[in-house]
Amino acid sequence: MVSVTGGTEEGIIARIRKAQQAFACLRAVWKATSLSLKTTIRILNSNVKSVLLYGSETWRLTKTLLSKVQTFVNKRLRQILGIFWPNVITNEDLWVRTGQEDVAITIKRRKWKWIGHTLRKEKENTTRIAMKWNPQGKRMQGRPKQSWRRTVIKELESIGKTWGEAEKIAINRVRWKAMVEALCLTRGKQD
Image 1 (cartoon, one colour):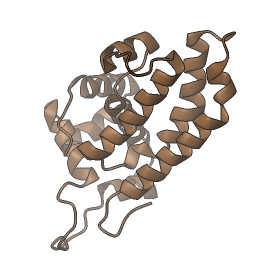
Image 2: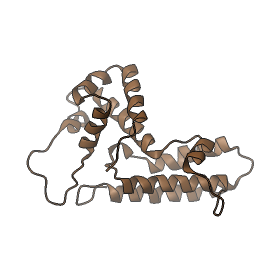
Image 3: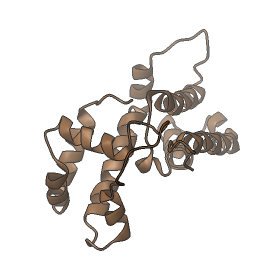
Image 4: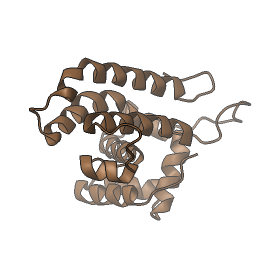
């Protein structure tokens, strides 16, 4: 889903609702005492987070939207661990106990893996062509200043790479994986 203003907010909100439904359907799993925490977290990752993050490779994230996605994940992790108010645990401690990482890093890793996959396709491939397409002319009033492509270029600049260099690196999967890890270590600002 893309809104009239070119944002992806409606799509992200819809993904959160679908993930809430997936989580609710597995209520018996979350309450089961016979399952280990590791197994429960694997079920969360495969059945809830996969629904939540489907298509996240193409999201244009803002701080507000990222906060909504992260809040959803944190609430579900706290439910699984049985940590409710007035008991308090920091997000970092929560992630360490459950073996999770910041959703921003997860989304960034998924995005760059998808970009690498796309850049390895033939030059005539529609997806690869669309990734380089840059509409000409002035942006309409009210359109977001920060586009998906601009965020990708900004992330590349954070590690001192250009789009042309990224295209060359994508051919070598080992070098691409190393670049993705370097990108995920640098936490760029989200608009």
